[in-house]
Image 1 (cartoon, rainbow, N blue to C red):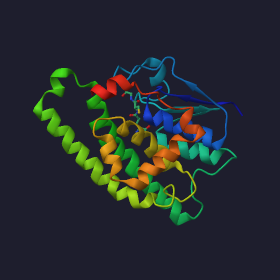
Image 2: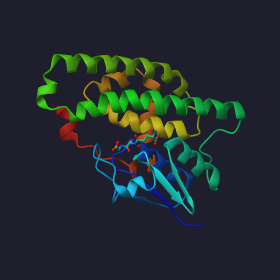
Image 3: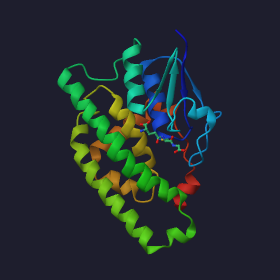
Image 4: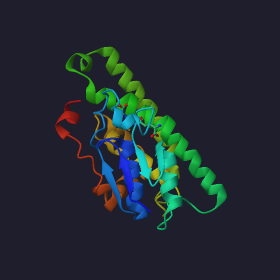
Length: 222
Ligand SMILES: N[C@@H](CCC(=O)N[C@@H](CS)C(=O)NCC(=O)O)C(=O)O
């Protein structure tokens, strides 16, 4: 069997998720960022040959080329020996799919695409614009609402108790970005179980070696 290759961007939350999945599964892999566009730029021909939608992450393993984070994580879990990244019972696996869907559709959109990215890339004029501030406040409220729904499900450690599973690997990197945003720590303060889970996440080896090393200066002034 050939080595697993993950194509991604260093600060992409979803690329981080699949790297975490590989590390938690205890498989060796190579993370390749060369030849991939910078965030927001046109997809490179190199990436388009693997993913016609021009997005990362992408997994290449033997003859398999796979995109979409959830599919990649499920493959990593099923194709290799190592700690399970999912629960065992069928009803719990179905529940896990529910949380994966919530994370990849709703949380990814609201936290990263409609809150973090606009905040980070806003110029001074936008930051002083009342409409922008109102939009960001509305997004913050919506995120706080969603995280309050999630919070009781983290009362026993992770979503599935002591087992760190794929939806946790999706959600925790998003929380990392959220917490670094103005207003983020206040949102987290209202969801104590999630906040504790995030602290436990940061203590994991897989989190430490994939830490995006956020540029504190940009985020503080965002
Ligand atoms: N539904 C896809 C979303 C992939 C995605 O949007 N990835 C972002 C990075 S987190 C990306 O490739 N952005 C680069 C760009 O838009 O140029 C998945 O789950 O993998």
